[in-house]
Length: 221
Image (cartoon, rainbow, N blue to C red; front, side, top):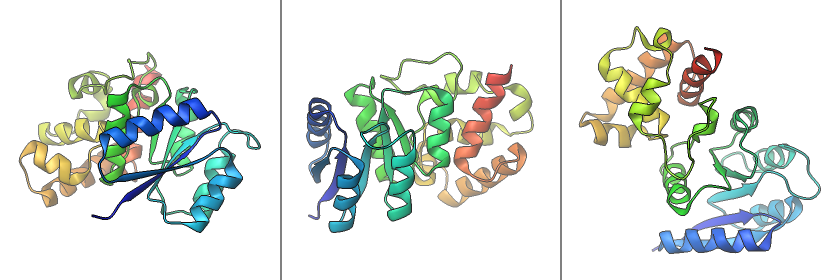
């Protein structure tokens, strides 16, 4: 069985060790490697095959999202999950604009960490509740679909059908089309059609923008 390599990039050894333990306990096929600054992280990406990066947002020698931008410039196809103590909505949204595939607050528990990794490994995007809601929900458990539904402005979704609304709820949990199809008991091609209709009705270009647009409507109320 081929291994899946996760690079944990963080300048705090204790946190790196704790995160490594969570990852290795959750996945039998994962190999973890470590780095403690952006140059060593870029070197690891250049020298070997890395499937996913868990990146601390603020490490020595970089400011703000500069490290993420450098990683995505060098390895645009490698998914990056930001791991940070900073969970302000504006910071989270900017990270996604820079190419992040997920944003994991360091206050997250092991269950949420594994959930985020599973989503990104399957091609999905992990969006924490902090990116969607003005009043943060506990990040130790993902917000349920009915909570997401209640926090979407009715004007945003008034033209959506019940099935499209159900798909939007699951997009809010970061599920892939395949996972949504399985959850709703419909074909994947049908999910794709619903997603296209949702994007058109919300006036956005992609799945992540649909989720964030729904959140921004709530923030403006």
